[in-house]
Image (cartoon, rainbow, N blue to C red; front, top):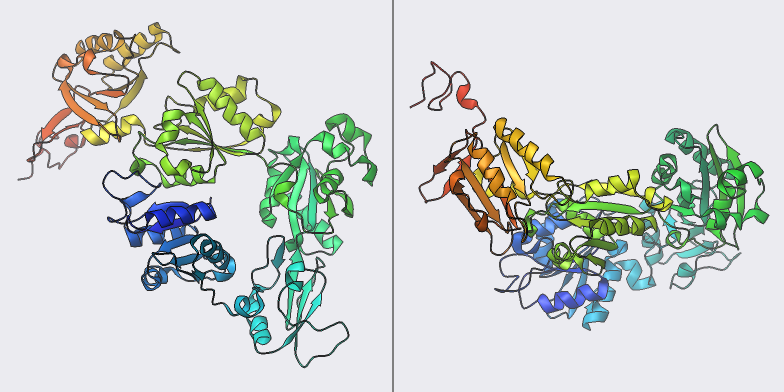
Length: 625
């Protein structure tokens, strides 16, 4: 999941204000890299922050395909990224900016966004955009980088075509493209002759480019699809390809795949969209029914079933709008239908119908930015909306900038999850933000419970759900304390808000008798003070009084505290709502290192293996000296 939000890099605190100004102008994210990027007490800036070195951070953003704007010397930036350069057609734009904003230099990907970024930045800083690509300088256009709504069939031929034009050749335009017509390219009139011409063709018709010809495909086609539930993806793709071939059009001219909204979760529809690299968009039955007068194959059977007289043709027509037409009427395979619509102008796929919504269910770890996974960062960055408990959203810092926040108080878990699902049902990309791991005492299970038994809308039931793991509190506590989870362990929540106390008691007894290492979540609250004492007393019946107990509070946050105490000295008043309590098994030990640190660990059992070098190992074995 690419993150196309520009990373605006600054290496010093002095450059921070400029980075923030540029980020605001281009909807980017100001990020400090290196040890000089942040002053003491400065707010954490990003999902990476100064935890990454300059070279490491720049290379990481580049390999992720993220646009880079770096306030630093061009030479240094080039040297850092040089080993990664391989394919000009896939590399992200890279722009260098002088520390005073006076010079803005697109270095990489000039025709893939860098030139445009440079111009936007220069407008914001009052500097000069040092665009050096020949086509932009001479003609005000880049032949290999058509604007949105157009795609170049043969980009590998663009360099030679531009070289010919720069050398004095004329151009001939076949078709209509306002962006070409408005450029300074020297076009010859129809019927006029020229010693050498470059032919620029704008057409959806499928054919192979001739020598000295560039073919631009206007994105004017929308493929309407209908499918039985569970239709095979390969069948749908084959039918789609046949429809385009029969219509005699290039697949590159396809703007979108469209269907009925109840097909938003139909795998075959999304497989076709992915096959052609276009978005899938969905319309309500009511909107498709508005196209009934224009259908070539209306069906009363379909109307009785889904509420409109045609899905494939209706979706194709709805996609191309009132000025569009059916390029090819409905075609059928065994379980799929398809039709092709054509608009007079390129179709903005984002403006038609709605997307299938996506719900990212993410765990951000205990709180430290360094403990948040890159995948979670990418999901949050790709989201339009963030839903969560206010504290968790605050912990995202600048990663939450330019997002629509939906803050909820504690105790509103069902409302929080339902809201996130319904937002996704509207076609939005939503991150449901949880602390720790979303699947451990958090919101992921409630998502699926609402899908299974909750009263959510049909649209919310058809969203795409993507879970991403996070570091749980028990993992963070264990890592800080040593390795107490080295053998069998379990987790038990001591909160009786959602679980009967009798059930909790039964689980505590079973875990005690089974000699599990136990991680207790929700050990106490302001009103609930007796459950942890009960658990301690039960455990003392089954394991030694000096069994190590880890008390970990505010993990990864200011005020972090990790202590190891004997089980018999576990005092309830020393534990609060933000504490995770890990009680070792009868085999858990504490070892001290020379620096005075004490570590808890639970042996895995390697001492029982023959040939071990561990003292007290397998009977008859000799410890290594």
